[in-house]
Image (cartoon, rainbow, N blue to C red; front, side, top):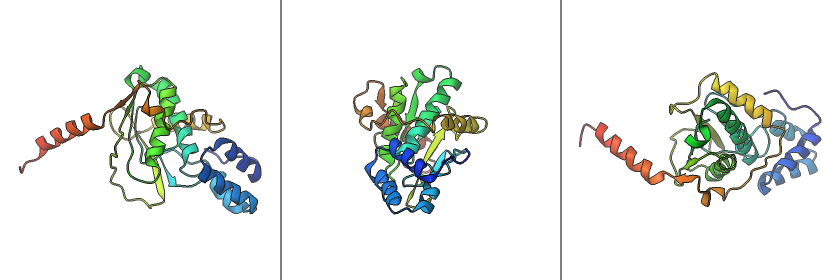
Length: 224
C-alpha cells in the first residue's frame, strides 16, 4: 500500500478520529503537542503491509504499527485466523475478502485464537467482534493457544491461515491486502471487546480442540 498523502498534522488528526484506545491516542496527542513531526511520520505515513504471513510490527500508535485500529481494519477486510495479537482495520478487510472469495463463508465461520503476548487477547476479541457483526460464525479460543515464535517483546502480529490450515499464499495475500487498503480511510465502526461473551454465533472450542489435538498427538508418539 502506498504512503498516505497530506500533511502529517492532518494525518495525526485522522488517527485521533479513528482511535478509541486511550493509550495510543495519548501517544499521538503528546507527539502533536511537542511538534515531533519526525516521529509522527514514522508512525503514520506508511500503512502496515499485509504479506504472506499476515501483519507484524511494534506495538504502538500509528497506521504503520500493530494496534487496535490496524487490527480492526485488517479484520473487516480469510477463513481461519490465528492472532498473535490483532487489530481492527485488518479484520474489516479480511472479512470483506473472505465473503467475496469463500462460498458459504459466514455459515462455515472463522477461527480466532491468540497467544500470551501483550494485547493479544484484546486484539482477538476485537477481530471476533468484526466478524460477528457481519454475520459470521466465530469459533473462538478463549484460552491461550501458543505460537512458539521468536520475536521482539514489543512486537505483535496478525497471522492468517486459509481453509486448508496453512498460511495464505498468492493470490490471497494480495487480495486481502487490496481489501484492507479499501478500508484504510474508514473510521472503524465495530469496536466491541465484549461482543464475544454473549453472541450466540460465538462458539468456544478451546476444550474440545485441545482434547482432539492431544488424542491425535498421542497416536503419533512411538515411545509410550
